[in-house]
Image (cartoon, rainbow, N blue to C red; front, side):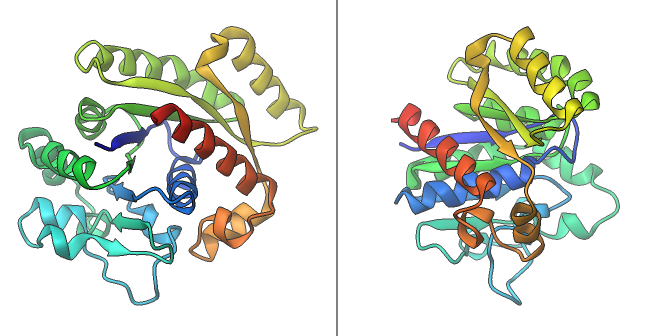
Length: 255
């Protein structure tokens, strides 16, 4: 049976979706049957996962509403072992309350993650920022969680909130493991960035923070703008190699 890896963060803009798509691509390149599921109403996965042009835009929300079948919403990517379920029509809506209500009040998401575990080696779930009902539902059905933390001072203020929230869910889901906090957008030589990294490492248990750090690189920004994971577009880039190293570490843990 496969493993569900949730990528969560208290705030947006910290590299959550970039982490989701690059880890998924790196897993797939290792020959692991991988599925990315985007449950974030913002639906950013569709911009960076490597889909073909003119691909369908329906996804999980349309399955949740009963408008599409599971077979219809699982889309291929440029990698043979990587499939994706987009957020779907909710990403074009201004009001996400009904979407959130359906996830909170039904077992559709839980059932989908259970089916995905049966068919895949790894299921990566890109979640909305914060610890709302959607994230709670995801974590209740996950075995692993990674928390991207941007190397900037504001991100530090939200870290205790996300850690407390995860701990509360671990008390209900004993299968859930916090694999670690992932420092992202790190800029060597930038005093602010280096201070944040140093603070995190000195104030949190060593095993709670990954040794792997994701640097801010032009190649990573260009890759997402081009609609591709950086691990595929620029595999020699420092950020790409960091994601590959992290995927290797996680894959070994999952086994």
